[in-house]
Amino acid sequence: MGHGRIAEHGFLADGRSAALVDRDGSVNWWCPARFDSPSVFARLLDDDAGHWSIRPEGEFRTERAYLTDTLVLRTVFTTATGSVAVTDALALEPGARGHDVGLHSPRVLARLVRGLSGEVPLRLHYRPRFEYGRMVPQIMRQDDTLVASAASARLDLRAPIPLATEVGEAFGSFTVRAGETRGFTLAYAPAYDAGPPAVLDAEQAVDNAAAGWRSWMGLHEYHGLYPEQVRRSALVVQGMTYRPSGAVVAAPTMALPEELGGVRNYDYRYAWVRDFSFTLEALWRVTCSDELDLHVGWLSRSMGLNQGIVPIMYGVEGERDLTEHHLEHLAGYADSRPVLVGNDAWRQRQNDVHGEPLSAAWLMRGFLDPMPPDIHQLLTGMTERAARDWHLPDAGMWEVRGAERHYVSSKVQCWTALDRAVRFGSRLGSDADVARWAAARDEVRRAVLTRGWSDRLMAYTAAFDTDELDASVLLMPLVGFLPADDPRMRSTIRTIEDRLSHNGLLRRWDGDPAGFLICSFWLVSCLALAGERERAGQLFEGLAARVNDLGLFAEQIDPYSGEALGNFPQAFSHVGLINAAGDLTDLDAGRRAVPPAPERRFPG
Image 1: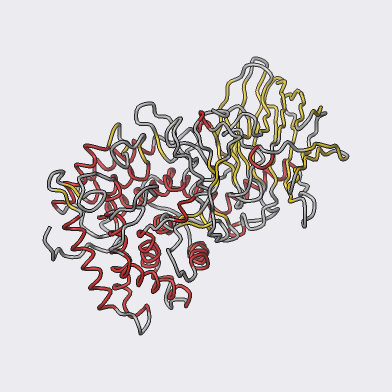
Image 2: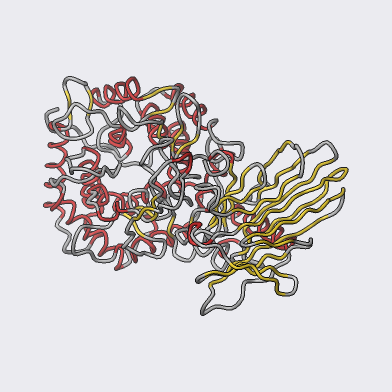
């Protein structure tokens, strides 16, 4: 299983990359160049794929927490002879505050060991493995530094203790007494066309990272329900933002399985357009316009003008070719293979992609007046594509790797694109063909209301002319396609909950191996909109309690064992929490951000 359960890990971030640290003090994941770059530690996926641990020599117990309003992790180890705290942080640029956090991070992992009581013998084991565990680096001493180098990467480890080296690894034992501090830094730099890795003091790096994250949190206010959970989730999503471009990755990890031993082990270190409007809604609730501008700017630059199928995902700097391959040398988490790097979903047609930019733009319309030319061009182009392509089959939002189908949620999002464009009207330019867009919108709606409904299930279905359930149709009231208290929509919500939910966790479809968290949060919003506010609140609180001890969500949770599954932490899950909390807050205040559903004018 690599090392440690998924949910046993804490999350560190610096605005460019992320690291995962388990309860035993082992850094088991770090891709230091950027989120989607090759790893130097990948023990999550194979015991031999690299790690860096600092832990007591004997038996111990642990308690851990983030320093308040930060992504700086403090783990307290208690042994029979004393206790120590290990504080871990990915360094930020010295002095970086507010919106500058993460723009120029130095790519340094800092670890600070401080004695709290008695004395504790500790053991350090440093075992870097480059290129996803393929390469054992050379380790050489240069003054007070251990330099690990291979191929195009270099790591400099600075440690205040003697370290013995063997091929590709280093070891050291030391004792920390109450009041004593030992600081360690591990700095990355490319081997070519760059200077040497940064040299930072560990204690200063930790203090600066804490101050940087607190300054960011201080700029953002949230006055709704569940403020503690919302603020933590907002910080996690910000930690998954590649600050130089504004891209928000789905997760900082790859190949963590949706099912133990299963084959759906995908690379999530990219940014999906599908997630975009939901993420923008979440950030809109808890951030300010400066960051919204950054995210929208990334989308506009990345999508540009498309001649063929619109890409549904991008690398963090807008790359389109994310070709997937199997890392055959890795055992995989819990022997879950293939271990996939890259993601071939970038090749798919997913027609829901037309709706997300328009939905996000409508949400942010107050910030888009006057509308920048590049945004105008993007929105008009997506509207025309929705009008042209809505009738085509596609791979659907769950990215099914098989025959294309007429997925209902894809049609609904094409409707969303056309509906928002009609609402924008002349703000999309003098050549906006609002009448034609309105006609196409109404045609999509008629098709969904007739071909997307099953009399046998008494529910809207996964695809046209089928009797298969799918939780994605819960988006219908959330985007304003139908009111949640419409009789057929209420029947759909009830049927989906009855047939796809277990222990408060909603699966995407019948046979999905685990509960999918954002779908579960969609159910919260749908229940509340349908008038079941008390039950919606109870479901929300049950879901919010399923975070790990640090407030982190994976993508999925096994409804029977409670085990976290899928890539971790998962931005979509945290976005789901923020938006559901916001929906409950809005409803209690008598307001609703989503445009109202149109009057029903068609049969069905």
